[in-house]
Image 1 (cartoon, rainbow, N blue to C red):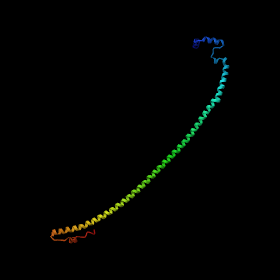
Image 2: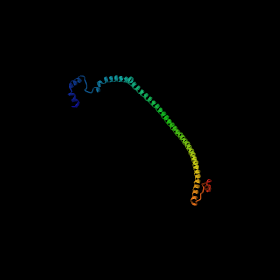
Image 3: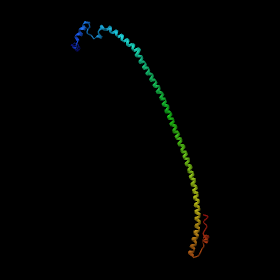
Image 4: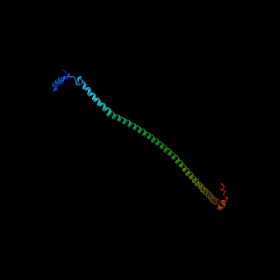
Length: 190
């Protein structure tokens, strides 16, 4: 005895089911594989297939098709939008790079211009300072020349006074400063 037969016999009402099957002429095979039920199975298969086909063709497949078409349109729109945004981003990047290059060029031109202005101001101030220095040098030379001439003039007087004192001290002669000065050689030509 097989396991299935044992389970069927042990199940409650197994005897009643066996009697019921015997009354109706069942061969004891699995009902879908029983040839006596093929006609009704084919009938219900045709009905459910037709219902399923109608549901699929009239209601489900059109909805799926519209969803797929909607998704395709959305993807195409998204791709178009992405292309437009990419083009805008490229334009923005190009404009930014152009403005950055313009700013760098302006900064460079401003630096060159500022350097030229500063160099001109420095040259102007240097020229003014050199002129002032030359003027002061000329004034200093004049003052120095005056002081030198004055000193030389005083040296002659001091030399004459000293010569008169030396002559008086050495020889005992009294010599006036005017006579001593006349005796000194003329150094003004130097």
